[in-house]
Length: 485
Image (tube, rainbow, N blue to C red; front, side, top):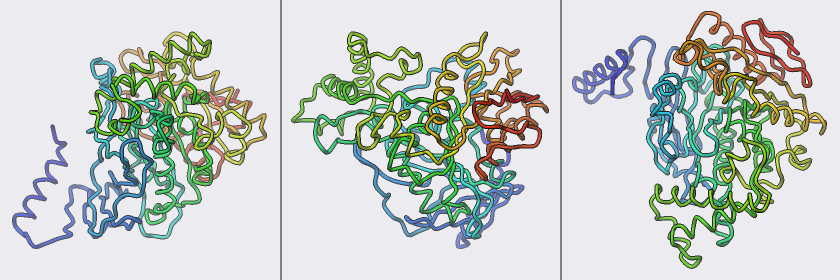
């Protein structure tokens, strides 16, 4: 591992302090504006105190446990602690298959992934804030990562860093990890009450994280009554799903869906078939179902993936396989409409009523998964989601399409999937392998991030340099010169 120069100096300084003054504690080590004093950064949570660090005026906390969970069981509160818990490095990420993009030089260079280290004990939150223990009520923005419901983490892209939003925009940023793929969405409900909710554990983890925000964020300088959930791709699908979950009602007041209007969730008919096929692939019987808790993860994932292929063929024979491309590639890897945790499809009247008072930003990027034409995958779903909410008399929907094109790799990326994220986080320079980091792009990032954070503050997206953003059916075309259409 290559250390950044300032980190190397910091480690050297720490060693000098620890060797020269072994009895001294709570020392402030400085390299530039970095401060790591436990005394200065300690915050009390309901589970115990945590200490982070201060970077250029922003208090940062990483890897805080918000829950714990046994395999295929709902998450519960973490074990409490009494000593100050160091929380300066990202915690474990959810187990996931190897990312195919690592074998593509262009993708690995532009995306700059950090997949961290995997462990099933992965329920962690990360926090960026401009102040702690100060009684201020900053708007809170909780980011839900992409990767479908299969992979990803709250740290996977460098542009998820919340420093600029916290320092320059006055919001508290939270990112999180939750269970994914077979550990988060394998429906074993046919095997007894113990597994009744196993098909939705990943979404239940997110609700648990939002409850952690409700119970703890005030000490991090945030307002638990003003929480915006936002996410991209699979993260947008999670936002869409949370709006249909009774257990999430009241835990957020605004929502942003970026290229993730995933509203066709799995029915129990097929989720249970996948569960049964997975168990059969493992050579287990109903009487030995509890042995699934000790199956190595890689073997478990392989059995799950094979089961999904089998059941997809059955759905085709039944005429029930989704015609929509996105729903088709996600078949079997989405939450389950089980009648309890998720009572109805997100587009159903019952689900829309749950989030009727929640204003929403919904949008897409112009060349998602296609370079030579406007994105045909996400845009129709985004428009349908907006229309469904408008028809149901919900709070305003603000539509956008991001059309700015990256100059990286001689412009080969175009306006590609994920490209708006560095702009949303005001991290155009930080993620310049993706954006190029040019002056115009940086300025556009200031505008987009201001619109997103003003939405978190007031429920209306607005920013100097952007047209007045009218609600759907108008759409804001976001580029160097943005326009409302």
